[in-house]
Image 1 (cartoon, one colour):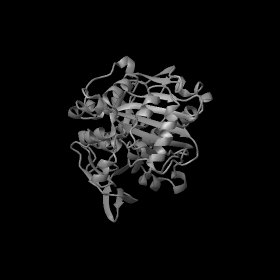
Image 2 (cartoon, helix red, strand yellow):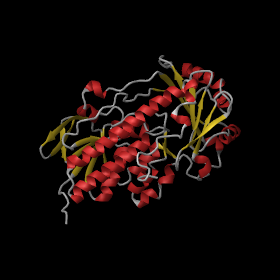
Image 3 (cartoon, helix red, strand yellow):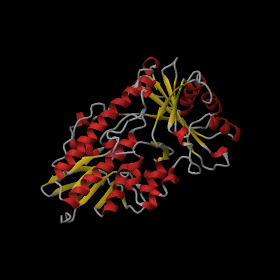
Image 4 (cartoon, one colour):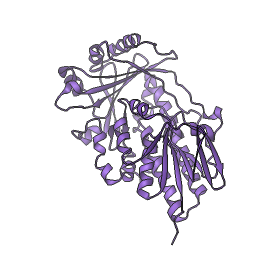
Length: 407
């Protein structure tokens, strides 16, 4: 019988969905961990905002890792926890001509859910203690483990997992600064989260999709991503939150003030079909128009795991653009594969470096595929002539790397 590795301890950097799900999995497996978050708790809560995330191909990974009580409450994190959408409708994402409204394609997306980021994070924090205000400043690898340094405080563990997002401090310790740098694409992104009157909300909702709708414009280099971001009260449509993400192909920076951003946002929305045109007209003057700056690791490279003692997961491992709705799903697969590797080391006598090497290769390979595809999709979304030959029209989002292992 294999004797479990005594005192095995995992240091997790970052308390986003990736780090928290890994913590839940380790907790269920009886493996010690500590999770650190650089933000203070107030900032952490505030920055969750109203953002939503699509989970589809990796939903079985999420469900298999969560303990039963949390799995039973997963739907509470949905954008509409009050009802389940028709599976036949939800699993076919509409891709429409933004000028005419013509349905160009239905893009397959297996078992999709749209989850509210803050609610998912709160669910995953259940029973997990997070140490806030702990910014990683250095990593020191030793013969018998790894040491994380936080503003002078040192913490020792067996493995350190950098799950600290696109601008990962951990990643900067594993590749040189030039290789770790992110790239900014030539797009301006303007975002609105907004409510409407009861009648307006019902009109827009009737023309919306329960997961997401995609609408590139054939006559201008723009695209709209839209969804119902939060059905706060199913009986009060005036409380429903709608999300519009307008992306514009340009090297220009976004306007600095909200008034100018709203003028630009409304102008482009006015060139679209319904319900976008009306949504733009109905925006109140005090609606914030957020300016988002997307970045991605265009030149992703393999990282040094120092004998299996340090690795990366989620956006820290493969920051990508959001144009394939794949980021969360790739991260969830990371967690499942990494958790399996650690369990094999702790309980089955597997070699740490061998297991982490295999995990890293998978994370790199899948990440590079998804980074490249998301960049291709971004270009196609804003160049109509490219759309018909793009992967978007040939089978949808991020097919799993091992279809027999997931879904």
